[in-house]
Image (cartoon, rainbow, N blue to C red; front, side, top):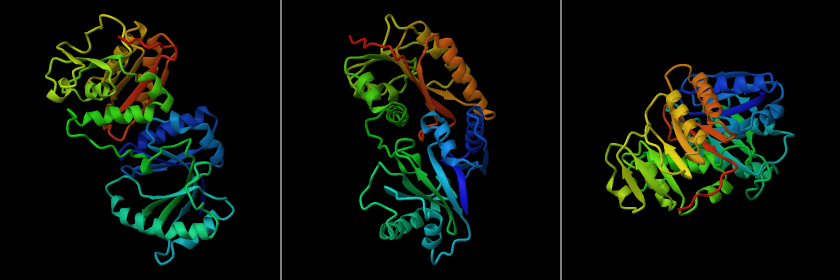
Length: 356
């Protein structure tokens, strides 16, 4: 069955938040559509009559609760397990060529059993598509990427992905490796934030050796350690102890103080924060740092409540931008390594390095 709209992956359990976000953003853009999903499914379909216009109006970079954004092409139900390829050819007829193929399944407990099917089916579908001229011989990022998402052995969604308007990883999940010397698993969260919320140009310009930073609520030092690996000097603010591996970097200074009360003796390039506090309190404090020129760039987390999480997210981001007192680049996303939270990147576009 041909379908028009979007297919977005998300963290299982956050389907209502993603559905609310897509619905509100589409309405603000004047695009008619409605969300269809199930709790803990790991994905949301946002359906409407004009899939191309919907995809253009809702760029991936502006979505918070989506791990991946794709343009939905078709929903195939009651597929014969003996021939899953034929109905896909029918659905793809007249839709052009694709530069790559990803066969996936939602990142949910129920769907992970489909991993073997996804791998074996990709090996069968890829040469069949090439024989029909529907898939290039080599990966071509100039063309759309074809996604086959199995919901069950006889139920699949077909979608197209734009490599410039979506995640670079299957299911939107970056596979980062935790190093043994990392002080905590939270280091992966900051690494993912740098990789996904900042552009390559921003990573090159804004993370330079010799810059200085503060890590509020630093213990045991995972985020400080990540910055130190970028050769950035860090003031790690926390009354709790830091891991030896963080102190061993030689460029992390442990200051025993309350992260919400401490202020830097001079302006810094960076401030990062992963403290467990109410999201509005964190948003307000982060805004004060920018308003008082305490930092030029920041990555921080907002821990979300159990209910009305989209409403709280929108309110906190508006609060932060209003109280910052200056135009900032602001991007937010629920990362793979986030739990009941989102991660925010904020940057002053007129910033100049403040090297020591």
